[in-house]
Image (cartoon, rainbow, N blue to C red; front, side, top):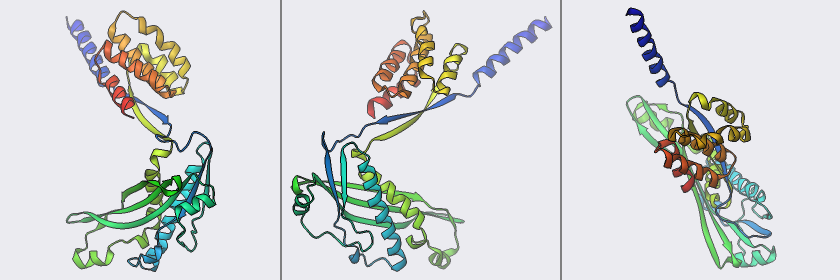
Length: 303
């Protein structure tokens, strides 16, 4: 009798430990094409400056140097991203030494340089804001805003392309009113942060015209019969994982079919076949209602 109780206890403990096994995840990056295309054939984009930096009197010399670095980073990033697009040529007229504005009309410049589009820098700003304060620390955020306009048809129509982003800085000790006033951080001492944010804000401004990648951490079912396929997924051998999982779609157990379909959805998502991933995730959800498949469906249908 004692032996039987021990066996039952061991089985219960084993089941409990299995249930407590942590969920395993796989990182799945999915690449998407740009939401908006310039033209189906070759495209020429003229990059100009319409932002008069000489009017920015609120910045001191040190701060102005950081602002110039941010503008230079923004312009170079915009050019670097656009030239990577298929059949796109960029002509950059922005003077990142003197920051002289282009006073000629958009129509004149478009005709002169045979440009299909004119991308004009309209404004750039940066700052440091107080985020939160408590008895011991103060939190600050650095922020950057960029504003471009994309002109077409010689300037007849345009689209505003704006990007703004902020980033938390390292907390500072609360030194009281006068101490905090003296130690308040400024953009002059945060060049690295401002330059980094300038690139990110520019990416945000141009996001509709650039391809992008979204990465999801997908949870995996961890059943014993799935282990061979899981090993292949982690190894990036998606064709082999596909071969191992497909037979289970014909299983008599609906939960098994649901799990296999979900795992196949991950395989196809990893391969970049979003439509097939949606089909298999839907099959998984239809066979057995589960939050894993529901999450994939929500993600892929809205992205």
